[in-house]
Amino acid sequence: MAKFLAELLGCTLPEKGASPMFECRSQPHIGLRHVTKQRDKMPQTSPFPAMYGSNVYNKNLYKAKEEDYEGLYYHENNLVSGSLEALIEHLVPTVAYYPDRTYIFTFLLSSRLFIHPYELMSKVCHLCVDQQRLTDPQADKARVRKIAPKILQLLTEWTETFPYDFRDERMMKSLKELTHRLSTGDELYRKAVQQMTQTLIRKLTTLSQYEEALAKINSSVTDRLTVLKTKPQSIQRDILTICSDPFTLAQQLTHIELERLSYIGPEEFIQAFVQKDPLDNDKRCFSDHKKASNLEAYVEWFNRLSYLVATEICMPVKKKHRARVIEFFIDVARECFNIGNFNSLMAIITGMNMSPVSRLKKTWGKVKTAKFDILEHQMDPSSNFYNYRTALRGATQRSITAHSSREKIVIPFFSLLIKDIYFLNEGCANRLPNGHVNLEKFWELAKQVMEFMTWKKVECPFDRDRKILQYLLTAPVFSEDALYLASYESEGPENNMEKDRWKSLRSSLLNRT
Image 1 (cartoon, rainbow, N blue to C red):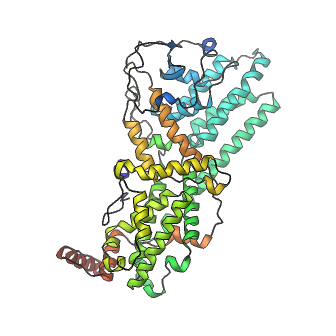
Image 2: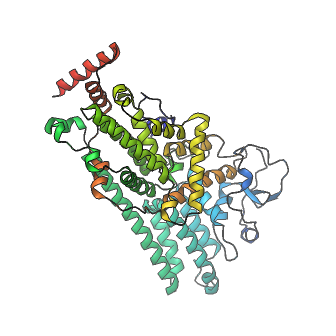
Image 3: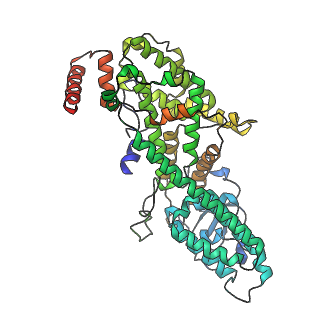
């Protein structure tokens, strides 16, 4: 994971000739007491407070204390910090209180930096049972009927938004115990619990099937050199024999992007960067479950597409054919831009800028590069990717006002999204000097992740072409050494360094055969 992050965060648009970018505040501490009645009167938090738009989290908001609610601190009616215990209690509904959805998402997202999800679930269940006296045989049934829908709503939001938490058997055990108490003797609640559980199980089953499919795809992918040994290059398939229409290929790339995005859980953005909480004595924090496997698989897809593009360009023997492939991918990249598929766009540009491709000067001499120059300008990393961010805002606005699924598509340049989240996470402390959770930071973090959640829910409106999808996902690609070898075979070495590398690569290939 450490290597994965190190490579991922080196996020800049490579110059021609570069390798792929992913080679691979003080406040007195307030003790917590049961504050159910007081919590019923707490101000609700407005959705993602605008006061934090400046990204400055360490300004001194605490000199003029405004409102305290036994471990929670508010500023201008916005919850900005609190003890972990108070924040957990703030999550739990009562007969007269239900936390707003912004808080639920933000706390469930960020709490895993301080406490295991199964431990949080255990505490939530305990508070629900204890506060509402659900274990008391004489409990007021009318009161139970009032609180049960709210607790079920909280559990439903948790299972729908963070379903992967429930791959942990300890989570499922707590969930079953609490829902059993709520549904006993009431058919209406029993049906609601059954529906929630069935939906959760379907999601987890689908995830397992997706992971199995990915494993099969990865195991079937081989190096193009291995294929060359058994099948002459003249009869091998290439991208143009599979799909010669740039728009169609861009649509199929969008299918892959949206499918893989859909399986990334919001918690993966947090868990990818999780570090041990200094107040947590458990040194094995988060070591017992997958942290960001779907996020990593998505980054691997970016790498594959970059290498596939480079392979398709370097593979043809004839210069005219190579130039035609380059122009085809330029058109595909432009269509990706028009669709709002910025991740495929950047992967294509990255593949075309890899050194084995960029050194083919005679080939590039036959290419009309004006359209490619425009695309590179759009993804220019200068001024913190200003041009790209402007285009992304435009696509996002289009998505908000869209009247069709086609207009809703926004697929961000993923490594930059992760980099933004990473530096937001690293840029300020998770806890304040008094030990309170710095919720001010997590509002902004949640806002960014929620925007991603909106993008990943879009259904791809284009027809699927299984033959094209199969090729994009499984066609053999050259390794970096094989790309250089193919490049030198197409256009000979130009200097002593290239000649030495060519000899070394050829010798290595002969030894392998």
